[in-house]
Length: 65
Image (cartoon, rainbow, N blue to C red):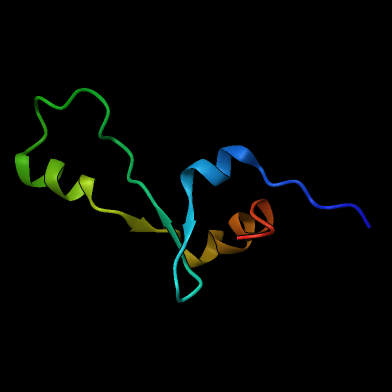
């Protein structure tokens, strides 16, 4: 059976954690930052986790993660 291809777009966005969850970057941090509070911008820097409802979709896109 041939090797499965990884979706490269997903590989650049998600990393698998030790417990099997997927780490992701947060949205809304690229522009229009003037009206966002410093606290909000600081919290957007931190990594988030992929929701349990989306876990299966991400796992299919990253067969070797």
